[in-house]
Image (tube, rainbow, N blue to C red):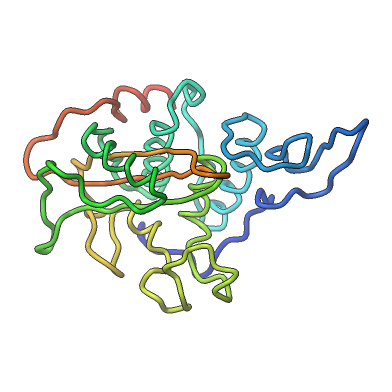
Length: 249
């Protein structure tokens, strides 16, 4: 079924969270992991193609474990803003599982997501946005991640969001035990259904709009996604799947 979670975290292969073997030539380092700089430092943020390709290899490995096809980025990926990329990758994970894509980015939701990103926190319901209800509660979901790239954040949300064997080895702070409700919560929220907390926007929802936020806070990046199903007609959107993404896949 589309909303089933992995039975356990899928270790990234290749592991983009470690440097791997490194060599030094004339004071300049080169590592198996191209996300590191020549001075062996992690970027606070990167959208470099070599790093993205490395993380994509890990995403594709994890997808293969789930029986899914590799992720194909739109040909316009490198012309998109970071927040547009967050919207795109959220939908790429959704449609890979047979779910309808979310419709587009909305300015009101993105403003709320941006405030949350600056605070390194999950977004709250956007003020001034009329949200529909599901099972008597607001139809919405949200997720936050730190990290150094949009694709790395996607991996942690979708494939490393469960129990890691101990609290220290678990990146999802809401996953405090193997049976905690928060385990796989980011993945559930982004796909549209989170039984641990609320029914979300609905797996089969067709009119969901999105807000996305990005900020550099201290030594890492802060990424947020906010999903809400409007209580009525679709609101204005600044960027849509149908116009700005689908033709370039």
